[in-house]
Image (tube, rainbow over the protein chains, first blue to last red):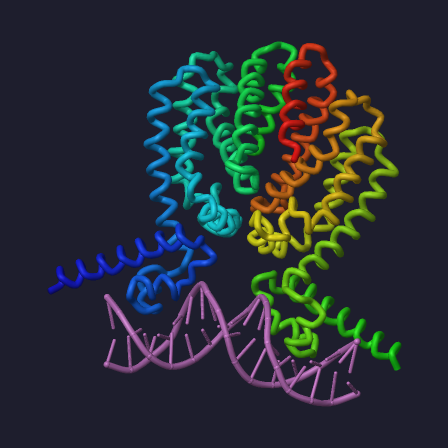
Length: 222
Length: 222
DNA sequence: GTCTATAACCGGATAGAC
DNA sequence: GTCTATCCGGTTATAGAC
């Protein structure tokens, strides 16, 4: 009896989620009303809210799904590329590629995740489980590359690459160009700049600049 | 007769706006309902919409109000400071000082203004009336400073400073430290870094890096 | 033709009955 | 677990007063 009920509830929940994801895809996020999700899933509005306490929560399930795909795709890149730049660009490209078909939904999600008070923002402790693997990914990016990086810079780089990757995503969200050519252009050009800057950071001429940059990062660390 | 009516309507409009700004301050943006604005102003909901066709429009007035104050404050800075760094830091400090008492409102607005599709976002054409004077301000910052800047860099710098200033504000929105000490620390340290980078940009050794940076900016220009 | 007020719509979210 | 009924707030329609 209990088992039957549990199974049924899981089916209902899965049904609602699948319906919602389909409608998000077909109509976009804002155009998908909770009433429409309930109707199409063949349940009541109240029941939909019983399983998902907000419309946002439906989007977060979708987001988690995409994340898993993206990380799998990055593994492929890291096992092939050997230069720092190719690995960095490859990983970001792989993540973008997975997200690309769902841009409209990511834009909507950003609205929630950008809120500093929202526990889903990319710097909140509650999203550390998402952020830390991502930083670890950029550590792998550097570790497997064949460039030498000064030790002090090397320490900060994974987190800086994580920030860089957030920046690219931010740009993408605002990018209105066809096929997001501007985003990919930015990625190509800025990654070259960044990798060159990393290489140059070992140069004595840039030592004072490098020192004050590292000091700044140290002082801002929480 | 006509004049009387016009005057009365202007008073009504001003009354609604002042009430809205007060409530935004007291309760925040999302917590301020249009019904509350109407109630507190002693007019009907319909009348509020007669004068302001959306809640966003009230926000535009709020922005304009703050910017006018901020610019006045910046004038003082620009007539006193002579070095590029002091002018840059002074102008950003002045703007932050004006915005400081309204942080709660800015945070709640950010959730809306961060949305690329929302007309309140800082890159939207509907906010050009705020953005362009701001870029012009940073042009003044550079023009009145006694540092020499290579002409090609000089061209891009006002917009880059505008982006930098948005970055500082973004950091501020997330900053939970008492009196926003982290934001001011970031401002001090990063501005020094940036001004040093601008000075170094004239150095022949950095010419390739500078060139590719400028090329990137040119290619990304819409 | 300028202004004000009331009622209603829409969609996200909740309460409480069964 | 599921429903119906309802709230809530942004927005609109409309009717009419001056």
